[in-house]
Length: 110
Image 1 (cartoon, rainbow, N blue to C red):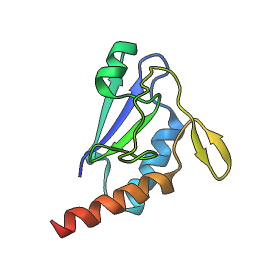
Image 2 (cartoon, rainbow, N blue to C red):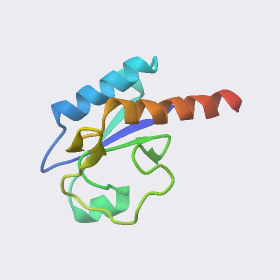
Image 3 (cartoon, rainbow, N blue to C red):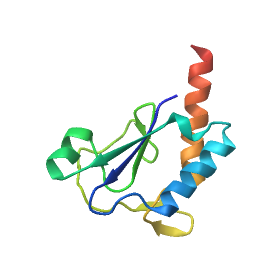
């Protein structure tokens, strides 16, 4: 399992995004050692790393919100996620956990 947490240099990692990721890891039986934290420095770096905004979390290469339907619009600014509580600047733990569970199931079949 490969989990990448991309964050922008300007905004840094946020406590809310970190907390939601930690909750998703706990719910799926993983620990923080599977997470790679990757800083994105500017717009060019954002394009090179396929950074959709701060934060971007990928599980086995798949964005937790878009999956394999990821847009080609990369940017170094803040990102907002559509949640049941409205737009939030971080993904909900359930969103992250669902992608982890899907990937765990794929890995189990391999």
